[in-house]
Image (cartoon, rainbow, N blue to C red):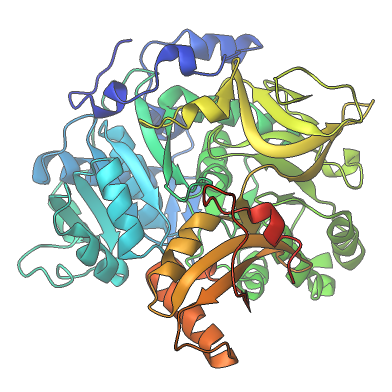
Length: 544
């Protein structure tokens, strides 16, 4: 496989080709994409936009900034020059991106990829402990970090491979005297940069996702994958236009947010509103203030916003996309009654980059996720990988132009079997081809659209001196889909109480990302285990 990467770390750590899913490229555009040898997806999205005459179109908007396509291109080019000329980046180096959703975050992602680097966007809420794992696993050499988020990165950096950092938002090095901010460095460079001629199958970015073991997995996405995602779900299901204005809550570190709030609008010449904070009230205000027409958020957020549905009835919104967790039929009905708007449901995964089963709002069947997105195939299989009859619950298996490639991770063999991606979801398909979500098939907890690995929360709890043992599961919750619940065995000398619960919750919030903390805690005398000592989480699900 050819590569333009001088640093071949990602190519060297791809799973063996025989462990890849079977890729399919159906239709003229996807077939042509599969045949391309050279492709830089950032250039394909941004430089092509300028060639089409979109330079003066509105592109990236926030409450304080409004950039055209030409201005975003110039800023991303300057970021690329800082990386190459000031920070010594060579193609293939991994660059950590740490920022809330802002225009500069968009420029940084595009600048890294244009320079031939591998972008590694991360959630702003991650703590040093979690960042340290990412720095080591991906062998991160460079970072672009919002100055307001510097403390956790500083704490994670010691002893890591990270050697070069630039700070976003005018920081005078955030505690590193003499180091200029990214913006200051950008001013020293011109607005032009020739994108590195990366191979279509060079890795463009790594997206980290928690697994059932709690050890993060890095999913590897090629330049070709980015464009393939743009040609599938948004074209066939969303059907947005160049005059649309995108807005939403998912961070750009999530592939749901990266696609919906950056890649897809850029691909069609539309504009996107990037909000650093996107709670339901702030989303509603953002829709009103910016005239947004397309919104991406979770069912949890739609339920909260439905309470102010009358305001949205007269808004500019026309496409409402729900993903990140299962969409209950009651939420779809509540949203429709409150706002007069339909919901586009969908299931995607970090491993496949974006949505592969979905339905347009007018074609939706209550309680069903939808049908296969053109370009993808899906089926329901048993434990042996054999396709099950319609109406039977089994494991969801998917294949298409994108697929799972974990960075140096034996769990590749779990996710990809017989050429199919097994998403970890239990589904059934009806006779009309609609796929109905049943549950997760692993120990992943999906709460308000966030994926939370139970063992990771257990590790955080176990680091508190009061905890002797613990087990964590997800339990159903009307507002969040699921919440994290912990069963805790206390050490001698510590008593069950509300104060103890709060202490443990605060400890978890300070140890890992705060959204992962257990919202429910039960104290138990012992945990159910096998004879060999393995925790039986399934038995906890029947424990009050």
